[in-house]
Every structure is written in structure tokens, then in C-alpha cells.
Image 1 (tube, rainbow, N blue to C red):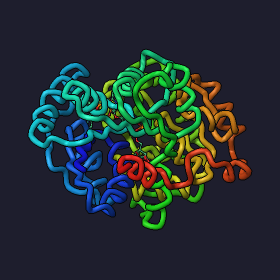
Image 2: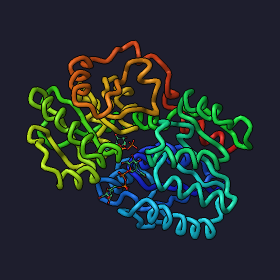
Image 3: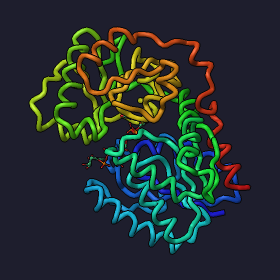
Image 4: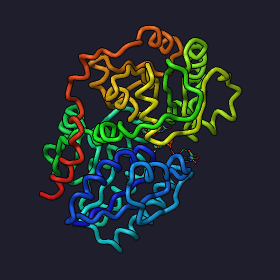
Length: 353
Ligand code: UD1
Ligand code: UDP
């Protein structure tokens, strides 16, 4: 069986780490990896391939740093060429980025079977590019691997029961990675105090809205006066901050880190504040409370069990949540929300059926 895997952005490399490890156990599967180039800085891309020992991409398309239309369009053209040459049995896509959508469109046009890992998630916010990418990808997928019960239910609500596709609850491949790579965690070299908050901000709805970005940074700066905040800064956010006269002298801003340093930071932090999708779950995997700087989340089960507090970009709500969200309710750790680290195994078994 030949699988053409489409990767492009940081969270996809992390997810692919676990699935590629599983694929390597099966001699009957050949994986061809296409890296679209959506993320291209060494610490947004290469480091994950090295640290997580993901096979070197067979194709690097070099399409990054463009508008949504240009990026997605050029990816479609190039992935189509690769697909015609390689003639895979499956195209496999992850998550909800522009690289995901490009892979999905090629598969559906060329009648190659499409497997979507992390299917069925919804924020119900149609202004998010990710929501569009997810909905369109899900609709043309032949097999949809859902990380959670909520994701399965979302698909049922949209009528997927009546479509000619297969919906499988696989669990979350990110949990596979968190469990596997934990023992390889590496302390970053920056100045780290005993008690610190780990923060990431990169989502377009925050970075591209000056009012939201200001409110978030004002709140963070106030919190950082009493507790260290370590913020590995995504290049999108960095570029935007350079043009704003914001005060963030108390924040410990560092370059994006690799996954092994990230795992160390999550594991040693006392609180996670983020607008990342992946990090909300990783906080939970490492039993850390999480404050999410978004108005909605795809990982609603974490809000329901109170492991995660949604605060949007409202300065007062952020400060209030910081004062009240200081510990993780350990009863939550026993909940099996994400499959317990067996998702990659289930996905490959299912594809081999
Ligand atoms: C993308 C995904 C988002 C995901 C995020 C993970 C889409 C629509 N968005 O957002 O869902 O959460 O990746 O991190 O696919 N840049 C660099 N160096 C890099 C990568 C990006 O400088 O290595 C710059 C680009 O030039 C661009 C900006 O960052 O100007 C945004 O990059 P882009 O890939 O468009 O979107 P992300 O915000 O990274
Ligand atoms: N991550 C990382 N280094 C960083 C910031 C994030 O390794 O400097 C990891 C993080 O732990 C998670 C993944 O990147 O596994 C999430 O990616 P991101 O926040 O970029 O995207 P999202 O999950 O929001 O799509």
C-alpha cells in the first residue's frame, strides 16, 4: 500500500511523528512524504523532522509565506503533479491548515482515496480559515479519523451517516506523541524561574485584530509583573508585534522551540495560556490548567470538565481567570478523552483492512 502524506505546518509535523513511527512497523506500507513548505524556518520545520525522527520528505514544494489563495492554489498544482507521478492508494492529510485543504482537493479531483486525521472538529466560527479547511476536507474524505466523541457527533449532525465515507473514532495522535516523547524532554537554555506560565499566541483571529492583540498583551504584561511568562513567539505574531507600540518588557520572549523543549516547558510550567489548538490538549496531557485566549474551542470536552477556561481576548476576563485558575483538578486525569496514546496504531490498522 502506498500512502502519500501531505505535511506543511508545525502541528502536522508533530502529529505525523507518531503516525510515521507506526507506519515504519509495517513493511507492506510505503509512505511518501510531501512537505508543502508552508512553514519553512528551521525552528518551525526541520527541527521536528530531526527530533522526532520523521523520515526526510520525498518532495519539498517550497510554497510558504503567501496569501491563502496563492498558497493553496500553488500547493494544489504541485501536489497534483506528485500524485500523478507516485500513484498512491491513499492521500493522508492532518488537521486544518491550507496544506490539508490542498491535499484534500487533489485527492478528490484525482479520485485517490483520502484519509483525514483529526476529522470532525468544529469551532462553528466560519471566520476562521481553519474552520473552512476542516469542513471542506471532511466532506471529500473517504475515511475520517476523529480524535474525540464530540468530533464524531459533529459529523453525525452534518449528515455524514448518510454519505459514502467511513467515520472512525481513533483517539488523538497528539496524545501518542506526548506520551512517547515525554522521556526525551529537553530544558531550553533561556533563563527559567521555578514557577512560570507557558504562553503561545499565533492564531489569526488574535494577531490580525489589533484590539484583541493589545488586550491580550496588556493582560500578559500585568501578569508577568508577578509571575514569569515564557512566550515562544510564532513568526506571524513576531512580524505583527514589530509594527505595534506594545509594552511587553516583562515577558520572557524566546524563539519558537522544538517539540522536545516544548514538552519540557509544558511539563514544568504551572499554567498554560494559549490560543493554540494543540497546546490546549498538551496542557491536559501534562495535568496543567489551561486558559484559552479564544472565543471558542474545538476541544470542548476540556471546557466541560473544567480543565480549560475560555476567556477570549478580554483583558479583565484574562486577569480574572489567571487569579482563579491556579491548579489542575487531578480527577480529570483519569478521564479517557483522547484514546490514551493508541490512535496511530488504530489508524494504520484501519487503513490496512
Ligand atoms: C498556520 C495554520 C494554523 C496553524 C498554524 C500552526 C492555516 C490557514 N493556518 O498558521 O491553522 O495553527 O499554522 O502554527 O493554514 N512564517 C515564517 N516562518 C515560518 C512559517 C511562517 O516567517 O516558518 C510567517 C509566514 O511568512 C506568514 C506567517 O508567518 O507571513 C503566517 O504563516 P502561515 O503558514 O500563513 O500561517 P500560520 O499563522 O503559521
Ligand atoms: N509547539 C512547539 N514549539 C513552539 C510552539 C508550539 O513545538 O514554540 C508545538 C506545541 O507543543 C504543539 C504544536 O506545536 O504540539 C501546536 O502547534 P501550533 O500551536 O503552532 O498550532 P495549532 O495546534 O494551534 O494548530
